[in-house]
Length: 304
Image 1 (cartoon, helix red, strand yellow):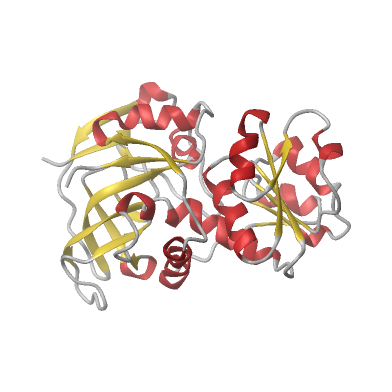
Image 2 (cartoon, rainbow, N blue to C red):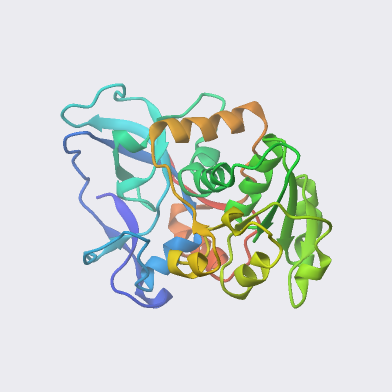
């Protein structure tokens, strides 16, 4: 039977387990994908603790799959599927599946994987890459303006800095001192995080894309004269709205995924997958992200 890495209840790492699962069957408008890679994100372990994304409601069935972005090859198509066929390499957010051998995906939310894009890189785009793209686009800054990205060394931050640069923006990246060289290699000016970090920011800031929340978000807001140019993916909407900003508005469409993929193919965006793990070491991959040691993206690769 196919295997999947899941959490069997809310809690800590002790709630995680490998289980045998039935191979899913695609419903109308869905495709079944043999997973080749799954991106690992902070939201994955947060969901294990009971966290729900903005707009999510209802209870969660256990065991619950880890993973919110995958790439793979279509092995079965449901009723009414058009534009996708068995054998097509695709990527997107799973409806069912994730850190698993098979996943169900909705055709409304997936895109064809370009031949020049690896399965590993494609698996970083539905959450990290697209969230970065959405936030930078939402800021709508003119070329030459300065955007400050907090959490610039993580998966979303790495993409946000590069996308900003591709759109002609000057980027300032806030990250730990240990990530200075890495952040600067992305084309951003590095600002060391920690107490008093705002005084180290060079020059004017026209927009902020926050990926951290908390005190970092509040401090970043003080750098802006126009608080409508404050966007966060690191704090709830009610928190950032009190500061005059907004939460990132995700655009979950096939066209948006294709646009992000094009940036990778053109060389404007490198997902910076810094480490990969086989499926049987999924727990270790998740720990790397949960403990805050990840630089760039962590990806689980599934044997074909």
